[in-house]
Length: 316
Ligand code: T6T
Image (cartoon, rainbow, N blue to C red; front, top):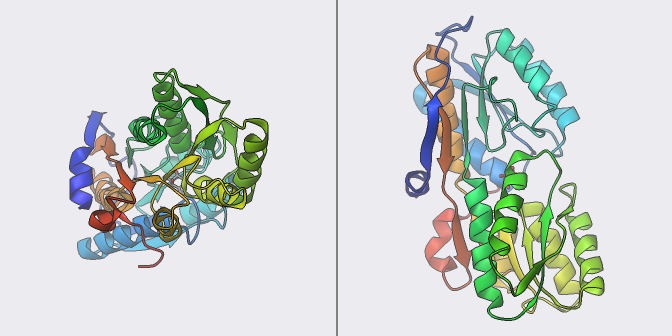
C-alpha cells in the first residue's frame, strides 16, 4: 500500500550530491529527528524508518521535540551532531531557522536528508522526501467543493505555523483550487500555531462572524482535530463540511462519527522508509534522487472501511 502511494507520487529534479564530503562511508549510525514526539504521522514515519534501518544493518537514533518547535529541535540537532552519525534524517520545524545548524552538520561530514518538511535553502540536504503537498491541498479543495455541492458560502483554511513548508504548500494548493469555484468565497487563511485549542477558537469566531460558512480545511492533524471540536460544540457538525489532512486514530474516529467528512491521508511509512534508504546511499557516496514526492489520497466515511491500510499508527 505504501508502495502504491509511492508509485502514485513521482521522483523529480536532479540527482542530489553524491560525494563523500568528509563522511565516513562505513558509518552505520543514523539519526532521525522528526517534528513532534508521539504524534501519529511522525510515529508512523519513525516505525517504518526503524524497520528499514534494522533490515539494512544500521543503528537509528530517533528523537523528536515535545512540540513542533524550532528552538527545541535546533538544540536536539546540536546534540545529535556531537554523536557523529553518518546522516541525520530530519523534518525541519522551520524552513529557515534550521538552515544554520543543518549547514553545520553538513560541514561536520553528516549527510542531511529531509523527510516531510524541507528547508527553503535547497543546497544543504542531499535528498528530500515528502508528500506532494501542493497537490494534496488541491485534492482537499476538490473534495470539499464536492461535499458542499452547489451551496454558496464561505470557506476557511487553517494553516499551522508560517514557515512550515508542508502546510504552507497545502494551503496554497487549496486556495488556488477553491478560486476556481465561484460559489465558494475563500476567507483569509488563519494560523493556529499547531494548537488544536487555537484552531477551535478560530473556527468558533469564524462561525459567529460568517453565518454562511459551508466548509473548513484543516491543513494537518492538529488543526483538523481542533476544528472538529468547535463545529461539534456549535452543533454544526455535518452542516459545515470539514476536510482534514492526515489520518490519525482520532481523525479516523471523527470521520466515522460524522465530525469530519473527509481526510487527505499521506504515506508517512513510505517517506520514512525511503528517507533511510536515501540516507544510506548518501553516506556511501552513491547517487541519490534530490526530490521524491509521495502521493496523497482522499478518504470519506463511505470509502474508509476499504482504506484502513492508510490509517496512521500511534505506536510501532
Ligand atoms: O501533517 C503532518 C506533517 O506532514 C506536517 O508537516 C506537520 O503536521 C503533521 O505532522 C500532522 O500533525
